[in-house]
Amino acid sequence: MATSPDNKLHELLEEFGTAMLATRTPEGQLRARPMGLAEVEQDGTLWFLTSKGSAKVDELARDGHAAVTMQSKTKFVSVSGTATPVEDRARVARLWKIEWKAWFPGGKDDPDLVLLRFHADTGEYWDNSGTSGIKYLIEAGKALLTGARPDVGDDPKVHAKVTL
Image (cartoon, rainbow, N blue to C red):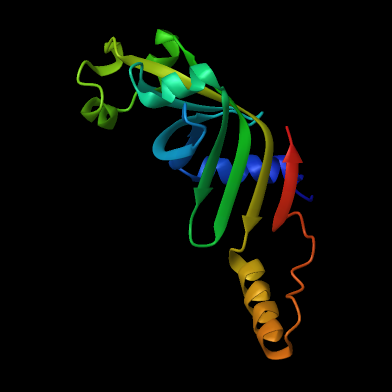
């Protein structure tokens, strides 16, 4: 059975533990920073933990639009949507990982800790792993020799744009 682009996007999101979260500064510039991914929901909602006093929380209070990107050597994901801080101690307790204590010395009950809920509206992915990567290399090589653009096709296993 073929995997739908929505499911493929979710599968790829699940593979990553770290992402780059981009927000807009008060001066209008885009600013991205690495974030540990706490949870991925089926609908594309991503959960992060952050400090209530962080610049990103202030930036999102002014403009909730954000983007999240993830990449490995052969897989790339970009999702756009909105992010909001959420106070939910039960969810924090459920998601808590001991390594986060480095950032939140008070542990899961640290008063500075807040969840960040990112709701994706759109997403796009590229998966050049396995045989898809071999096909890409062949097409890129042909393009270099002929001067033509590579024919990478439109296989949703490899690339798709998704509305969530």
